Length: 96
Image 1 (cartoon, one colour):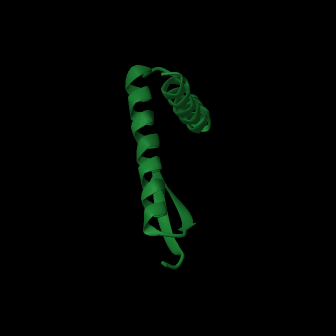
Image 2 (cartoon, rainbow, N blue to C red):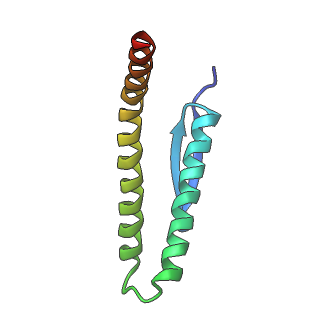
């Protein structure tokens, strides 16, 4: 078991101090920061004339939230679909 780690994650030249429980959790935060930076870069390339940075930040938050909602919806229905498929197989085998 690892102890708590103090790390800094950088987004938009802002160091964000965080405490994480493991190196795996550290990787998640670093990957998330990288994803945010990448999305900001792509949005700035696609929409170079937005009037202020806050529009880019809001768009990144919206896209990230949509991804989270979609992932949550997929995760919550996957076990149910697995059970339905298993039951369907059992019923089909029983009726043969």
